[in-house]
Length: 105
Image 1 (cartoon, rainbow, N blue to C red):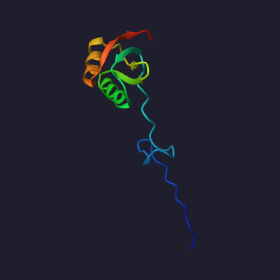
Image 2: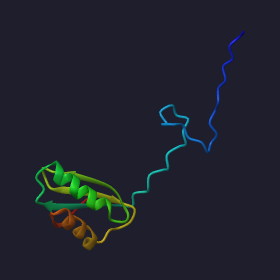
Image 3: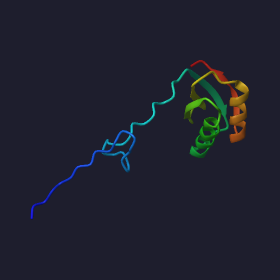
């Protein structure tokens, strides 16, 4: 008796189990970044502070990415549209820190 090997190619609508083999559906393109806002935030002292500020800012509609420099207190926010200072201040306040103001990007 001879052995037969069968190869099944996934259709375009099917994904693989984990995507590591490259046969899964392509990931959706990242949102287009239209605006970069750099903020000065005070009160952050550790990694937990960074995580809290990042998590709260990512809840603001339009925020795509957040990067925090703990040493300087600079927080860079990339968004799909301009963001209101009041929304940013509220998110940072919710995390337990203070927004000093915007810096030049």
